[in-house]
Image (spheres, rainbow, N blue to C red):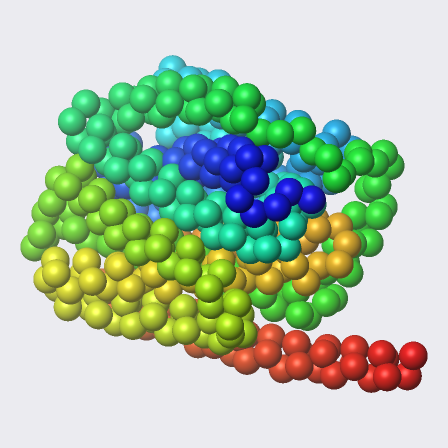
Length: 404
């Protein structure tokens, strides 16, 4: 196994962090553009949300097929295939001029993004020692947030200055260079042997993961957490370009710098789990994020920014702990388990967008707080259920060991 601090560890963490950065830059490129695109195509906020939701929905339904494919052809090959397809799909967006075609290409982009996202953590679990993994997962998810920040700021500022196609062109060029670097840096796998004819095995594993409440509850927590986090930002984008603020798209996109709080919190989770229970950390992260949504109620840029900082810090703290929980608690078919977590995660993000944007359209931020509060309460309930199931599982394990 690759140990913490070794040259191979550095190559793995750097290459996977870069790949993660590229994936999330492309995924979120269009999010700050949504107000502009609604005007450009003369559609409503809910309708234009399909540009963003198409990629997240397609990503979510593609995760498991890619995870199964990785059991046959290897994790590394699947990841590189997805990365190299991303700039080609982006280039096709430059020649389309209809909303429907753009939505379809964004869905195709989601399929490509899923190839990397579905198996990167499984690659780490299989190749890295336990200590190395606990540090690498924080770095990997920190790269997620940095990619999300960069993609959104590039999308917003370039669209404001030169048009949305310029933002896409810049992302295509950057992704091409980055993907080639990952091809060069990422080591071949040493602790995984591709296996043929594993479809039935993974179907059984899928059912097993869903029946295992100590895993499935964490997946639900991740889905609701993401539904709130990413879409509170989308709503805030519409809020800032509307009266009384009326900020330009480029300036409004700078709110995504608040993601840096999430970059920080995701790297702190390893220190938390060294001393404390991950579930209590999920509760803490949820509470911090909830407080951020409430603080953002005050219609002043300072309070809105503070609210977004807290939302980012808490949401990424919860996500990192839940993601690591699933990957470590799954005793077999880890790629299927982590992919299934991300299925919940991105479906939550997709559905949550239509829910919170609908609240915004009909009654402003007050309705967003009301709708968001329902989702936060659901996360609290799931955390308490997860804690109860985890304690029961530990008790049963002790009894079994005693009988042996």
